[in-house]
Image 1 (cartoon, rainbow, N blue to C red):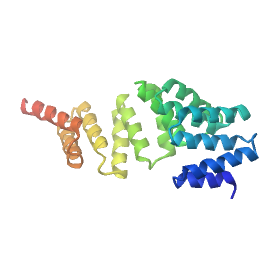
Image 2: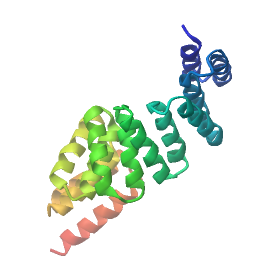
Image 3: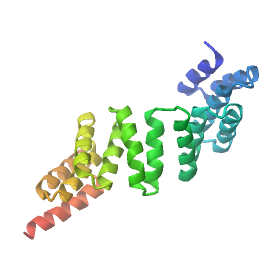
Image 4: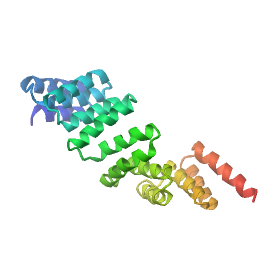
Length: 220
């Protein structure tokens, strides 16, 4: 097993000092190989040492300007620091250079969500959802984005799929209730809000929405 793989294994086992040592040795043995810098960058990113991580990813890109995972790593550096426009640029470079994985599309979509550009987020979240059909977080954010774009029929289908994966997903239940309100079905909305509160008693949004729906129904 080469030192990079050993370093990745140590990193996954939370043995960060040993991982750093192995990555350093790999870089010293092959200083023109970008993978060593990328893996060390990922370790530094995990440890939230963002400035150092950025330098390692940039070093990798100076050796190979098509290193898609280095762009992805840089995107994560910026995303974690809420520099969403800079993160977008890097995630797009990663995709342009052949990275076709759910996570990069998901994070690219989320950079737009974080800036309230829900229409721009939708195609990237859709691709992420297509690539990761059993990832609860990705499916939920896709469903939520559909709802924010007023595509309620599709949102309902996706959020119901989230409940198939995670039956006690309070936020999915709450947002199904919101969709039902838009569909002018207050009784169904109330059912969803009640279920959300059953699985998460402190769900403030569901509690408030339930009170509003009950108030409206009592006035009829």
